[in-house]
Length: 454
Image (tube, rainbow, N blue to C red; front, side, top):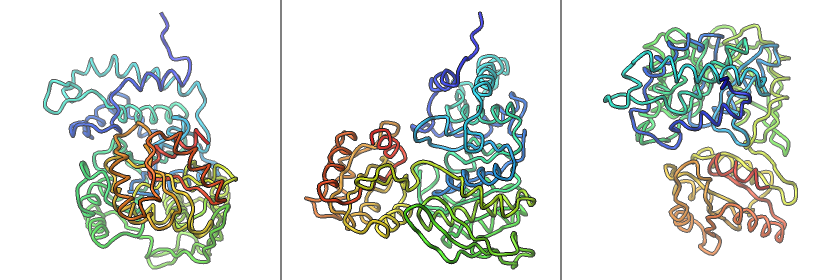
């Protein structure tokens, strides 16, 4: 009997049977040696093409997508791995700006199932044995990551751009030996697994730095920068710290995107591009200019033959949902996946600069996020705030978030409506009656729900 997959939907449905690491797992779920064993059993698909590896607390998805878009504009067949998805799980495993052919997904899915059902049991590796102290069946994220590598190998990709899922040192993607690593801005996040200080989180992210391979590093707080400099020195990894190698000027943020000039300097030898680059990104926000600059530095370092035309065209063609995305015109309705205090501050700054103060906020965040810090940032900027549930993918506590917001905004301005559909309807009705804009943010899972509803 032939039980091969006949569609990518069947593959993703089969994958969903596995424990989903993103829902929160036991510490032994995070075992890079188990992922290394999976690579060995699979014939090392992570080595099928040169790669760029990206970690960080915010902006890593944009940097990943922009890097892949530039490579595609340069003529590469670039496989892209990102998380989470907004509309469709295929967004996580892409070929450039589009999906793989269905035949690739199916063939890779058949290989993945054969690995899990035949090769893993035959190996008798204790790392996959739940009854041992360190054993655990492959997690959802491990298998999804392996599936990406299998798709990239079967698709004969010329390059891979890979975003970490969480952290870096123990992340499933850290089996890569990339041409270059990228670390975006660091904030406190996932503290149950990554640590309670900026230095501890930075230490986990620094785990993606590979010996002798360059590191592109975004501007960091002093305690994080010290960790990255130390790790790069220890691993003899050339450190390209963005504030030292480049400068953004002429920043212009408008409703349809961001224009800026990027100039690389020669403090560390020849500049990556000798002349200033005049660039546009189709997403509003200073942070997107910074993300684009990191992507350019990474791609040019990994593939020196990349030219200015590919950079310009790649950024022009770049698209990623839920990054300051306008999903409705009347009233103007923006969604953004900001889920840390600093990213939320930048999002609100951009929103208010374009649409003014006093709009409507729809907010929800997972239970492991710093709701109080985000409430302090957001509370004073909106006429009405609707607190709701950020989907069901992660544990959340909307009443606790509501309490946090009432501490920093007038209580009559804040409403708790757990049902997201009802919250969105009431927010839009209120905004329409007052002729004011709407911002939905706090969680990628929330904005995914909003995007489906609006």
